[in-house]
Length: 170
Image (tube, rainbow, N blue to C red; front, side, top):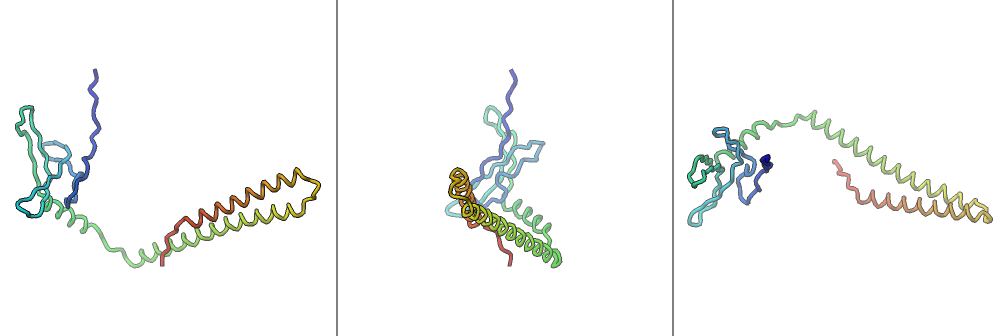
């Protein structure tokens, strides 16, 4: 019988200020197990966090234990991340803003065009109905169905455009 391997899922994130909870794996002795975040405090003092990897044998004896205070490792990671971030230069920022504004204008033009197309469909079918001979009852019924469908498409498009929120850059 084949032994089924359980997938290694990240542990759930707990409540607390440890920045790296459920993100760290133990690197000691090629352990590679998820480190748990433990909180502790004494006599009303603030709770502090530690990242812990604890392995025990069948008798409950500790065979492997790694504990790191969260404030030490979190501080190092924050410093590293902040050091890697660089300020964006003015030219790049201007180019990004201009591209975003151009995309915004293009989207608005496309939306207006779709709405105008739907309105033109309604007017075209309405004109067809007005010019249709009264003795062509079947054609009138078909044209009315087309007119109703065009009006419904127009209303649906107006509703969709009203609910779509396009972020504005100013």
